[in-house]
Image (cartoon, one colour):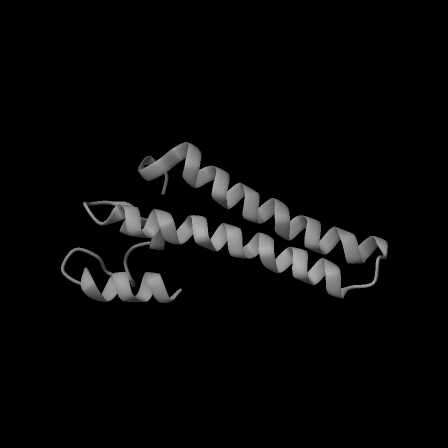
Length: 88
């Protein structure tokens, strides 16, 4: 979120946070910053899921929730790696 806000502030002339989605920051020469931001977000989501799993009792629901978060993090990271700047 911090990277999105900072990047949005530096690109006010070409980006409007009200009118455009966050992935629109991938366009242009500084698009790689937002791509890195998405990959880091995916990795942090996976790390959070692992920590959550370690903190919960090993019940069925204690495994399903963190597993879904891991899948979400993997999907986010995979989408960025596969689609690159063409996704959005």
